[in-house]
Structure formats: C-alpha cells, structure tokens
Image 1 (cartoon, rainbow, N blue to C red):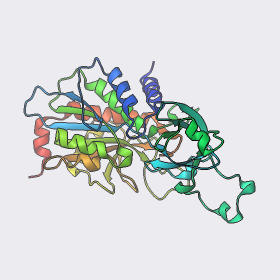
Image 2: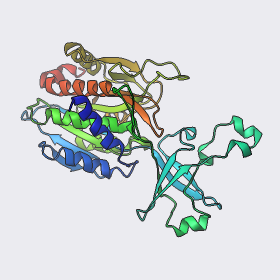
Image 3: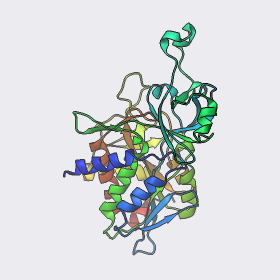
Length: 361
C-alpha cells in the first residue's frame, strides 16, 4: 500500500468517528490503540486531553508541544416542538444553511440512536418573504420521526442530547482529494499520528509532547489546560484552515494543492517570526511545499498554547480545507503529507542550540 493510501485509510477511520466537543473519548481510544507500541508515555489532563510524551535524553532539552484538536462541531437538543421536531443549539460554529436537508444522527443520554434529517420548510408552502432569507440557528430543527414532543420524550430524548452531522466519505476521481465528515480536525489528528510514528524510535534533542486536545471548537479550552500543565517552550497547533479556492469567498491565498500552510496571524495569535523562518528554511532544505498566509477568519489552539509560563514561541501549521464546519469537508492528501514531512523534519532537526538562538533576548 502506498503512503498516500495508508494516510487516506487512517484519515477515513478518524473521520467516521463521532466525537463532538466534550465527547472526544472515541478519538482518544483510537489514537492510543494505534500508538500503543510506539513507546510514548500516555497521560490525561482533567479536561480529557490526551498527552503522549517522548522524553529527551538531554535534561536541558526544550519542551515542544505539538497539538491537534480531536473534537468536531455538531448540535445538542435545545427544545421540543409540539409536532415532534427537535430544536437545536450549535456546538461550535455552523452556518445553518450548510446542514438543512442533510442526514442527522441523534444519540440520547441512554445511548439510543435515531436517524433523521435537518429539516426545513418546503418552498411550496413557505411565506414569500421568507424565501429570500437564510435560516437562523434559532429556526433550525431536526426531524427524527417523532409524532409529538411527548412522543420524543417517551423515546428517551432529553435536552442536551447530541445531534451529529453525517457526511459520507467522498473519494474523488482525483485520488489526491478526499471528502468526509469532521475533516476539521481529524485531518490534523491523522497528521499527529503519522508524525508520532515517524519519530517514535528516534533520539530527539527536544522534550516532545504530542497532544490531542479537547473542546477546541467551543473556545480552545483543552489547549489552555495542557499549556498550563506542560508549560512548553515551543507550541505548534495543527489544524485545518478555510480554503479560498471556491466561488464567492472573501480574498485570501489559502488553497488546496499548495502544501502545508504557515499561518502568520489570526484573531488570537501573532506567530513567532523566528519560528516561522525556521520552518521556511526547513521547507526549502527538504523541498517540502509550504506557503505563508494571514488568516481571514477563525483561530486555533495556538491562542491558548502561546500562554505557557513566560510565554511560548508559537506557530500554527494549517491544512487547507474546503467547506469547513459542514457535513463534508475536502482536503488534498499531498497537502496533509507535506505537513507530516515538515513537522517530522522540525522535530528531528531542532536542537537545544536552535532554541537558544530562537529566544528573544
């Protein structure tokens, strides 16, 4: 099997796991199972982040934290309609128009599963003025075939029960492309796994922490707890970023097929310019496709990871993705593998002396 197909196989495995914010345990279990024999020391923080530690033989080695969030966006039940439909509250940011008419999956607190869809008003019976408006979150509902609110409750449905988007995996004619549910950020989780395997048996001059974070989609909360717990010198977030190579986007230079993206700035983080330059030099040295960009919206775990004790040199390695926070996102396998290669070379090449040089005096 080619490396590309191996990566694709693992990515599909992670995308098909259902694990919204606060319910990331299935991703934790898959990571631990796949990396159980690679020699990492496993631990957890009190929020549920998975920490995989590879200590350095050098007692003075800088602490490097590489993080990918494990959670996906979704919904929870907010209220009941008298006709039996369920009103929803978003977990993370989702444009309601992206989900209407698609398959929904309800998981109750009793672990019962119901399949339905995100409903909408048929255009034939819609008020004329409503046809020109986008649906709002407060109007969004899911239909699981319950006849009334009492019927839903009788089936064990409660406020707070999870409702997942259910995008199928898409294998394009262009085998370099792949689509699927929860691409944000199971693409990053898969990159994390491949980097872990690449460095597991190597002696590194860094004290390495690979972390699957939780609750990124609701405010980078897990990143805050692990940053305070590990206190890294260098923090790197791996996350997908909105690609501008589709119609009607605001201007931006992120697109598929260009490699790993070095994020310079977003609403919460100004990346360390010396660290950025180190990665640029690596990409040139090893001929790994990368490009720099300024994010036109959104943020990553880097926002919290930068706030270790005294501050950490911080960077986000972004993975270009079309159709973020929707039932199906699309990434380019060669971009994701470029991120694997770039991060692996960083971890293997970086020395204690480099850290001493990168620190601001």
